[in-house]
Image (tube, rainbow over all chains, first blue to last red; front, top):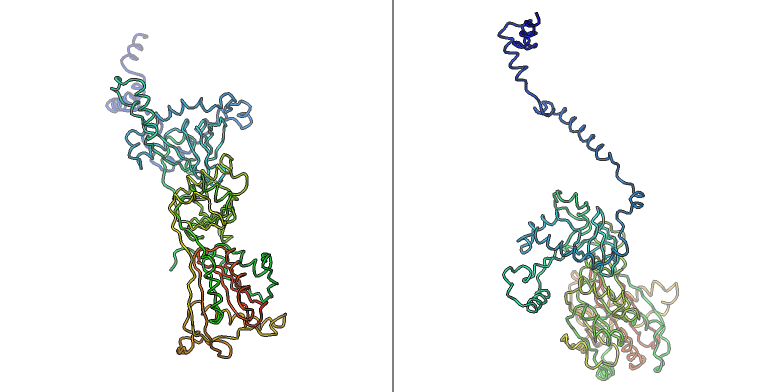
Length: 251
Length: 355
């Protein structure tokens, strides 16, 4: 008796047995293959696309709510906590302008790499690349501002937050410059001849220095101005942001 | 018509009439503080001075005019940066006394004026924000939404305005970055000494002299040249108003060399209904004009010389007109009239524009 039951379970799966009780053998076979053995396995709950727009909206809303909850799960720091932790403090010893000059040179190299040939032509192409660039290490100068005391501030950016630039000036002072109503100017000197020339090993040292001095004095620069009003985004958020031209009410 | 918007609070020019007595003139101590001398000297840059007298007294005036040096001024193209640096700043501004006016209209362009050591800049919003100097809002108040204009006033003679000090360095930065373009200036050296070598020479100034131009023997109908006797006091106010308005109108027509005041003028009353007030006296009059960039102190001195030099019974009219201010181009004016036969009295009209 056990052997027959064993052989029967081996030859026919239990689903077939149950189906055969309700349907004729042809139907049983069809149902078994189409709906059980070759059953489509949905990988994500939203495919196939929902037939109802309302259901789609609802699904989006739910997803957004969950993701927002998830984003706040490790809660962001409050202002007091931030100040206590001292994450953005710069110690007195670290406020020296000379410390940030290598960073500035790095930034210049980075910008030249981003712009490529656009550094010569300027215009729309350069502008779109520059808006997504990171500005830490740029040397900015306030050129126009609704608050007139800010005009003339010049320094290297050490922190680019949503509404301000924190800048270290040549006199080793840390200044916080709001972006609102302010226009910043950035100058990018084009690469020097001795730096970019590859096959110039034959030159003597002092000749190279002289050339460098000469080219520094007459070095062509790419100068662009950033309107702080339109730039009020964190540098991370700015990377993928598409900028549209707005009419500014301060101009 | 005009493309710029009208100010929302528009006020026309106002005329103030004064009928008074000139004090005793001591040649050693010329009066400065009393009217009318203070009003004449209190104007800023004067463009035109006109003198109207009768032909008989003209010979005296001619002598006066010939002995007097014609006022000189220079026209030069400089930038504000050039003014603030070097020998020009040290000699003319710190030590000397100069008067300078840049080109442009006050409500439209960026205008700079330098007077008594005070540099005043009338700027539009962009220039002000790029300059970074602290100033006050200028122009019609209560106009929200449209771009306001700004006035920046800096005293250049103060001891803190020295290269090396923070305030002065900010001014230099502004002049380099925001006001870098050279503009045409009118320059007048008020002090009697000229530094040698003249620091303005490298900028190739054009020297101009305001020689007086004389118009003689104008045959004109004269109005009553004496104010009515009862024009003094509160009861005579209306009479004074009529007299002064009619006389000012006649003087203005003479200054404009209008044919309406000439003898034998036959104009159709449909075109012009003006008639010279008074009893139809006729006489010959002369008009002397100085035009240029004149200092108010020179005008006051000329007026003093005239009052001292002319015969005491003679009448004369002396009027000074400033450069135009503001968008509407109004200028302010001071006109003085000494009536015939009354040597100490004067009637003065002050036309003040809104700004």
